[in-house]
Structures are given as structure tokens and as C-alpha cells.
Length: 478
Ligand SMILES: Cc1ncc(COP(=O)(O)O)c(C=O)c1O
Image 1 (cartoon, rainbow, N blue to C red):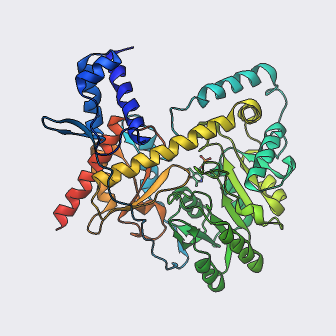
Image 2 (cartoon, rainbow, N blue to C red):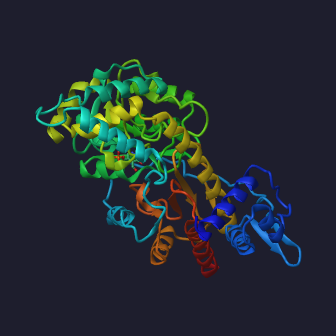
Image 3 (spheres, rainbow, N blue to C red):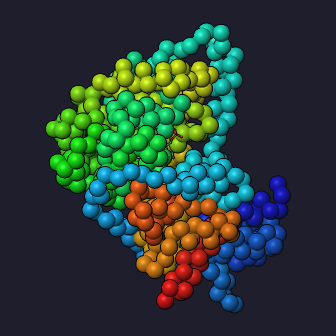
């Protein structure tokens, strides 16, 4: 083991002890010499470890007294405020920025908080490799022509089994596999709408949805969302009374970008509303399995006995976007979705479907989810600490109960796009608020940060730099 990894190891062990309260705020840490003797390591290793703790804000040095655990920041974050008025239906414009963010996010040159991808440090990657190797050895995946339009049967069987956890009872034949959640959403919109139609979406919402709406010549009506509870059903009702809305598109379980979770009562109200107006709802459930507390939340589709909800998802957030496996549970629109899938791609690659099917059946998927959820919860907590410490006090942000993105509202007098550009110059990527609405200038003071990756000194320092850039903007403004 190298000297370098030893001091990092020691620093993380002490951080764990601070987090589980073995060392309390204000308490003195063992002296450098005492710890070196106790651990049978060099004084310089302990000093280096204490240096890391100091840099990361866990301890402070008191001259001639030693190292002390910092007092817990006596602040509770405030949730962002979202304007609760509904906009008129409008054409979504294609911001070049979306493509810039996606392009930069795939480069290794930056410290990225911009693109919502799972943490890269989970052992599941080895399990996935084993599942792929097993199906390559044992299964036929070439020389059999096109697959059924519904997709691979063993995978659909596993998906049907897992859907029960979300409260959805379906047979494997009521599921259609796709190459991603984005393509699943596209199939649904194509099946349900034609150019010029109005689609209701929550605001702020994932830019991929807005870009799909734009590409298909549809108009978006943006229904305000609550940072905790998601789409405002009262506001949706008013919009439905006023406009000929053809479909509703929402992310009820751990939305992107707010991380909100719709309460079950509200899910039932949503179902009542779509039944009353007899319109379909597309439910994006891509983060549904990533809740931090207890059992996974029910999908809105769990309350739908008429088949009016089309649920879309994929393994892009739970495993990896490179796997190219998504699905739709289309309810009464099954035939239209199968047809749209045929138009779009005839069928999708069999090998990843087989491997994911194998992984879900025997590959430790549940174990991986437990580990990922706990890691994301801890990573969210660390983000909270860092934001409270380094960002101006008027900053507001969400603390999601699932998923791995947080929505941050910067203080009045700042500009998120300016921050995005300045941070990019420093090699740090964030996602500016303007991407999350079709209305120009709507989220000029907001950014989204993805906290899926493990915190490292570099990533923590990047948050500090972002905080300094925001403070600088405030100073320049005053
Ligand atoms: C809410 C939501 N839906 C869909 C997608 C796209 O998922 P996929 O990679 O499976 O197309 C994303 C990716 O960020 C997302 O956040």
C-alpha cells in the first residue's frame, strides 16, 4: 500500500467516525503523535490525513491546541421557490446549450456535475461483465432474425416481476422493450400526438423531454412543480380546463431536476383528472428505484385500472446508459407503441437485453440498488454540507429523497448562465437552469448539480470554487 493511499484511508476512516458521531462537533481529535503511535504509522502520514480533513472542512486547527471537529453548520437549507403560475402553450426552442452540455459531459477533461449519470465506482460493473459473459456463452443472440416487436421475453419477465414493487401488475406481454427511456418517451409521444398538439409538462423539467416536444413540432404547456411534491395537480386542472391538452408528461418519482416525490394522494388525484378528461399520461419512472428510504414509491400507474398511463423507464440511471435497455408499459396503447417501435428501429439489440435479464434474475441487482441508494444518500448529505459551507447564505436548494440531482437557486443578483460559463473556464461543468424550461429566462438563477459520483478532494474543491464564483457575482452586483 502506498503512503498516499494510507493517509487518504485514515482520513476517510475519521470522516466516518465524525459522521456516525464517534467524534462529536467541538471534540478534540487525538494528537498527531498519539495517533501515529496507536496506528503504527508515521507522523507525516497522520499530518497528511489531518490536512485532508482540514481541507474538506471536517476539522479545524486551533493554534497550540490541536485538531478539533468543526461544529455542525447550524443551518437548514431552504427549498427553492418555484413560480406557481402556469404559462401559455409555447414552442420549445432548441438551445444549442443542451448539446454543448452533453458534449462536454462526455469528455474526461472536466470535473462534471452537469450530466445525470450513475456513480462510476460501484462493483456492479463486474457483475454486469459476468452476466454478459454468461449470455455470450450460453444464449443465441445471432442468426435468429428479428426479435418479437415486444422485445426479449426473459427480460420482459424480469421487468414484469419488478413492476410489482411499484404497485403495477402486468404480464411480460404487456411490456415493450426499447433502446432507452428517451426513445420510449419518443415512441409514446409519436403514438399519442401530432404536430401542433399541446402537451402538459411540469416545470422545471428534464431538458430531454422539452427537446423531444420541440423536435416533434408539439407545444409545451408548463405546469408548476413543487420542490417536494412535484407537479401541481390544481394548476394542471386549470390548464386542462383552458387548453386542449393531448397528453401529460411527468416524472412523479424523484423528478429531474427537482428530485421531488409526488405523494400517493396526489398520484390518485392525477389519475382522477386524466380519467375525467380522458387523456393519456406518460410517466417517466427512470429514478423510481433510487429512493433512499424503505420501500420504493408506488408509480402513478399503480392506481390506473384503465390503462391510460404509459410508463417509461430504462437501466440508464440504475446501472449504466451505455447498456441501451429501456421499456414502456403502454397500457391500452400497446399496439400503437409496438408499431411505433417497428417504425423506429424494427427491433433492438438482443445481447444487452439478455444480459440485463440475466442480471435482474441472478446478478445481484437488489444488492447493487441497496448499495447505490445508500451511497447517493451520503453523497447528497455531503453536497448539503458543502453548499451550506461554501455558497452564500441566501442560496436555496432541494434535498432529494431519491435519485442523484439537486436543484439550486442562487441568490438574487446572480446569473446562472454566467456561473456556467465562468465555471467551465475553471474546468467545472454544471447545468444551467435555462435548459429546464421552454420559457426564455425562466430559471436564470438556478442550476442543477448531479452528485452521483464519489466525493474526492478535487470534486469538493470544485464546489468551493463554484461558491466563490457566486459570491464574486454578488459582490460585483452590490
Ligand atoms: C427524467 C429522465 N428521463 C429520461 C432520461 C434519458 O434516459 P435514457 O438514457 O434511458 O434515454 C433522463 C436522463 O437524464 C432523465 O433524467
